[in-house]
Image (cartoon, rainbow, N blue to C red; front, side, top):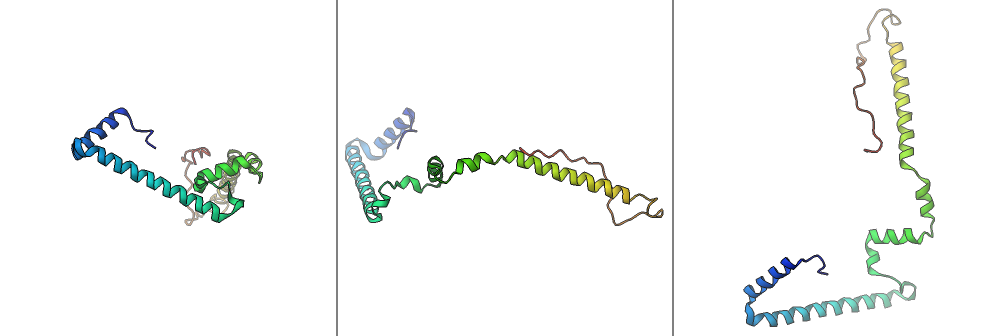
Length: 148
């Protein structure tokens, strides 16, 4: 519970406790705090036991830590009754994204080449179509599938 408290922090807490409660009341406060912590733990354990008995024998291996979504998913992935590892390993996201970007880039290049051929002034009788945007060189940076 207190694994991340260092020695300096512990000394600071002790000094503050002595300053706040005084050396004569400090043992009584420590006893009260430990008694309260024990009661809370007993209440928690009895509540867990009551819930397990009410759920029945099919939930006897139920752990309350499994209610944490991350732990639940890890436990289910380790169990692998549904074959999720095969599905996860069979799906390569980078490959799929590369295929999609190649398809999009090839469509853009085909669309730009067909629009440039049809928008030449000689094919439209010397008139310029003012509804189309002028073509600008492609100054956009290349699409990076890993960055998205």
